[in-house]
Image (cartoon, rainbow, N blue to C red):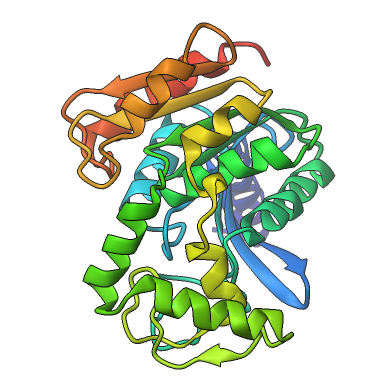
Length: 305
């Protein structure tokens, strides 16, 4: 093919690809600086959407990440339905954190860090021109989204979705710690309090264990943020403090937080708190249950742009 004709041919191919490919979903790695760390996320612009269109910001659960099956499943369905999404990793005080948390790494993060990091990501979306954000959190991430709704504020956030959000009970917390870590929670809390009171909250407690990481090292302040008796760790306790429209979604066969529906039901009285139960769904809402969740989210968001 002569050079000039070849150039025209390639130009036509390029234009066709541009015209027909520009509407495809676009996923991009997202990074946001925070306290000397790089926060990690994935921003997906759905087919036919602009980056400034409304977004579902999705937060994972305990020590998890944005590509765990639950989060990836929700992201895929949201994209198929034409909704932009931003899935994020909590840093857990680590730079560029990806994948599940490595229990060999000492824990320095605090439960409430999620509120500040959500704010950083909302500011990131604001710089893209986004005006409407639905905050969606799963499991402990759902409880942290509830904490955000009860204690923080941001113009972009229009509604909250709490998917199988964590509940808290002091007796269950003690029993769970004993089962996982083989020691009395009260003893470790006392040691952590002593360190924190002495201004040594950043000091590591060797082998204290935290959450799903038995035998791990953890700072006193980190330990207290997760285990110090605190009703604000309990999603239903936070719900009356939230002013935004809030949808709590429970799994009918959830064995991880089996009490969330019963504890939420008295609060879902036709005001800003709604409750939906997905029959037969377990805690992780895998496969077709992700479709059920997005059905509920879509209805909750409405069709306004």
